[in-house]
Length: 120
Image (tube, rainbow, N blue to C red; front, side, top):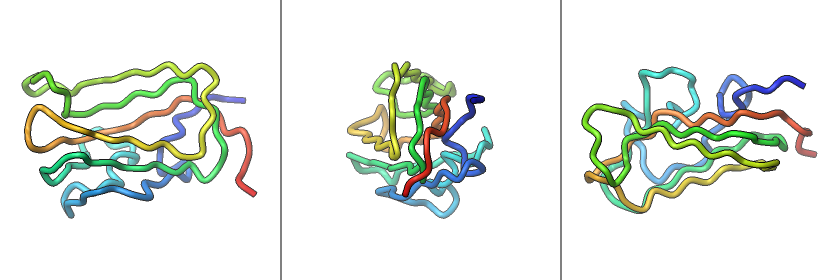
């Protein structure tokens, strides 16, 4: 089976919960595949979002591009890579407990892996 980015709306993935939403920067931007769009929080913490795959998946690598790290990096996206050894999921839940500033933005979540089975 071919590995794909499972966290794309074009793969049937949805953001089913986000604790804040700005009409110019909605949570769906996290999974739209467009590097120019992002989701932004509304200034309070904690914040969270949940991604639903609508199928069982096996994730091998997860990459999060964001601005919320506790270390200020002027104008540079932070990339957090997590290697998941045989990580199986149907949902991914992310909780942002604090950030460098009052706001945080998530530009993309990428999950490299394969679909294992459909939900029944």
